Image 1 (tube, one colour):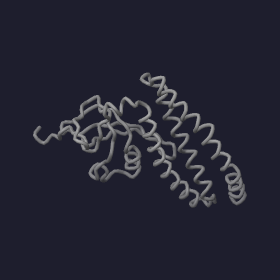
Image 2: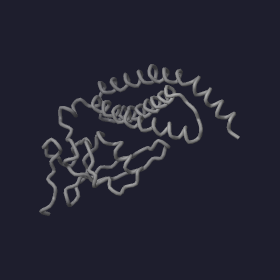
Image 3: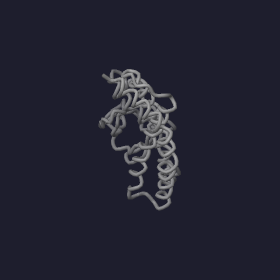
Image 4: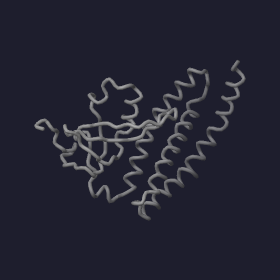
Length: 204
């Protein structure tokens, strides 16, 4: 097919089936006319790592992923993107193993948590639940920590995870669960209970 896209990523590297690639951006054409929840799901996975599993007849790359929305709904997505929207994960980066994965996980979940924080404020405003900004920040960070924890454990149990990578993961889990998470839980406890009491007493 003469109009088939050349399998070259955003940095000029040839990409083939079996490569690991990072989704660096998406085109407006892909997002056009999609429901907002689908747009949110796709944007939430920008800068995530994917396995390149297939090209279509036009040279577009298939990417599959699951997305969990802030309300807990899990959806499966399959999108087709231009090779120029991807960045090939080079051997030196792959050799860093899970350390690259941890960085990408944290970056993705921080972005997702920021979206959640905005939606929390909107929801609380809609139902008349008053909570200070500091407490909403605690809620956002707890969401972020829990999301990162799930993905770190998923990486920990991979057969390809080396002992060195496992130690890196466990160190991150330890810091999150026993340092970061308790701080936010303690900070949130009193203002959340106070706001909850007011909300319950004022609800007909």
